[in-house]
Structure formats: C-alpha cells, structure tokens
Length: 255
Ligand code: 13P
Image 1: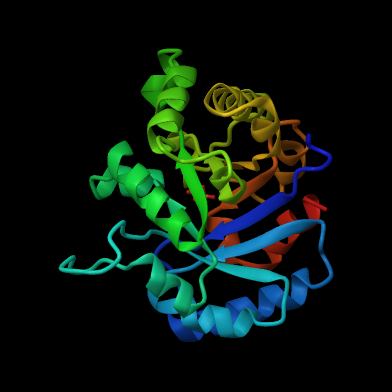
Image 2: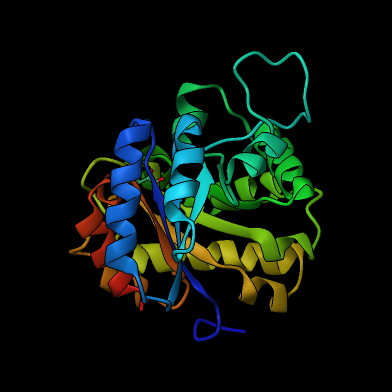
C-alpha cells in the first residue's frame, strides 16, 4: 500500500465550540457541501454534548462523527469523564486522543494517552492519535526523537491488527491556532519519520497502510500543497472546520 491506496481522512476538530443547536446547523450545512465528495473519509470531532445531535444530522451522509477524548475505564467513579461505550452509543465512531491541548492544559501524559488508546480500540472506536513537538524541541533539532518517543509510548501494546483502526495526526504544537503552518517539506518529513517508527514497531506493510494526517493551521489556502506530499494522508483541522465553506474547500483539495 502507498499514498495512492491509503484513504485520505479529513477530520475537523471543533474543540470547545458549538452548542447543540449550532451543531445541527453546521453539520447540515457541511453535509450539503461535501455530498458526493467520496475521495476521502470525512469526520467531524465535536464536543461530547453535541455528539447525539451531530450523529442525527449526519445520518445518511458521508460525514462520520467523532469525540475529542475518552476515558480508559469502562465505568466507575471518574467524575466528569466519558467512556468508550457512551461515545459509541451516542453515535461517535472516532475519537481524538492525546491532542496537545489536553497534554498542555489537562495533564495528559503518554501513559494516559496509551491507556485511552487501548480502551478506545478495545471498544471498537477508531482512534485519531495526536503527536507533535513544541517550538523549543524543533529549534533544538530533536523533532524526530520527540515524535519517535511519543509514537512508541502512545502505541505500546497496540497490535498490528489494531493499527487498521488508528490514524496518526502529526500536529506541531507551534502551528496550532497560530496561523503558522509547517512547510509541506517539514510536514512530509515529520509524517515520514512517524511512518518509519511504525515500520520499526510493526512492519513496512502496516506502516505504509496507516493514514497519517497533518494538523496545524491547515486551511483552504494551504491544504492542497500539504496534502500533495507523499506521507501526508489527510488533515486534522481546527479553526477552519468551524466554517463549512472552508472545511469543504479542504475536503475538495483531498479528492
Ligand atoms: P488549527 O487548525 O486551528 O490550527 O488547529 C489544529 C488542531 O489543533 C486540530 O486538532
């Protein structure tokens, strides 16, 4: 398998935006725009309370719904947390795990990212696993080491078979919400580095089959050149996913 056969995945990460009523309108509008664009998988990862509304609005369309986090326990005394079974029943098929905002603001570690990943896969969710370096790490020329370490720790104990349900999102922290974008060459090199770590962990066939997205200020203006790179199989889009026309333009670039 290679870029020609890997399915591109364009996923929106709404972060903490949109109430349920706004969700219904945004999903319906997005669905009307991306209808018939079947050259990539399309996912919207919405706040927990919006999942049911989003899933109902996306029913019968080519949009799939995801969440932005999941707890690793099946149930229990974990106030404020949400289990994989809850997400599935509410209508989520995907879940983002290890986003840098969770690592930065909510104490998420590679250990908990790994626990969440294994629990989500065991329950039947598809995982969008986020990794990425901060600016100081890039400036110190240790980006590859950081990506390698995160990928290995976050995927510890995840089987080769389970990797068919894992998407990796390379999100350089310095490019998120800043308007700064990695160059296509930087994005390709980092996604290629992650792919070579997957070859070490699994085998070349598995590594070549995994979808690796770029995320960080991807928009309607820069998506085409990023998505053209060999190792970049899609995008995880924040701000631009909140505007249906912009998200649609990125989906179009991935066709
Ligand atoms: P922006 O596209 O807003 O930079 O966010 C990227 C991101 O964090 C997606 O998960």
